[in-house]
Length: 447
Image 1 (cartoon, rainbow, N blue to C red):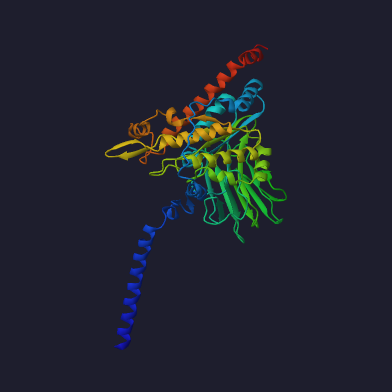
Image 2 (image 1 turned 120 degrees about the vertical axis):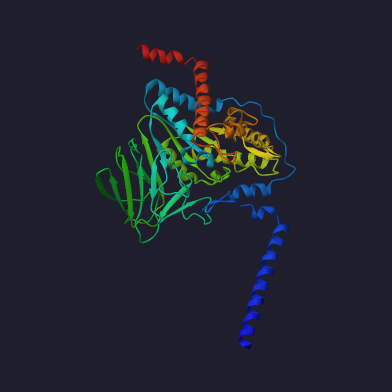
């Protein structure tokens, strides 16, 4: 009996201690600074990036000096437009765009429509660069993409520090030791444009790559001797599966699907990102990617994760993104930069969904960092209709936006992609008129 009573007492004390601990946790949590608990989980190991939280914490609340910037011309895209003109005139060469963004461009939303419009006008095939594994569903709208669970995938949003430099997509994939890993791609009715594997440096000289494309299989030893290595996997297959054996410690960055001359557009989506982590990309590795792809335009479309309740000033963000753009210019020398603002976002005020009251300040900050870095700027908020447009898009039949009044659905993304392309194409045609280039094209056709 004494043993039973003693056990009950211990159980009661343990239970009481647990209750007191829970109560103390919530008491102290309410007293501690909010930013300690600010990381919001979006998916497995994916959070709002810590660099944004750090920038917010270090910003001065007195720092609210917004320089009014009304209109930014497109002189920041002159090299890009000249490259497009050369392609249009000669039908030779290629133009490449790296389109960086947050979850607004996941699954190739928006970017797919921009790519299709450019390739329809200037030529080009393929969907660009795709990682070997990911932390979210990626490019499912453009390619069927599966991979084995034995891949270890890292990005700036993982809880662990990446053991290798991140690739151009912001991800790096490493094979777990002692197991085979694989990735497969399928494009449906279209062929996969010249798939080429890209991987990094390692002391591992025993890795074997097995390639199965359509009906054929081939094997090759990998040679990870340089900071960036490549191997063309096939020509134009409908289906592709690649298996890696003994490949541990080799950083794998992804497969490029691009064919011949024309325009190529890469979709690099960073869910939960403010864009600030782009400032951590390895310069030497990005220079190596740039030598391979020769980027002509870098597009930045961020902002959805920066908007927070009661956050009314964004100078800290503008200053941080100025540093990011300067870093990207070192990574991709010669490439022009285009900043696309945050789209409209609706928040419930009373009983109505209205444009978020903090959005105007964020867009002004985005315009500010574009202006101060010589980048071009597209005001997506105005392009989609301005005040109240997100609520309208979400309530249309059929709807063009999701129930979160932030993200576009497939139909809405197509419309946004068309609007962005039409805006850029309008400025390109203005560039030709201003520089009297139509005569050159008509002269080439007459010959």
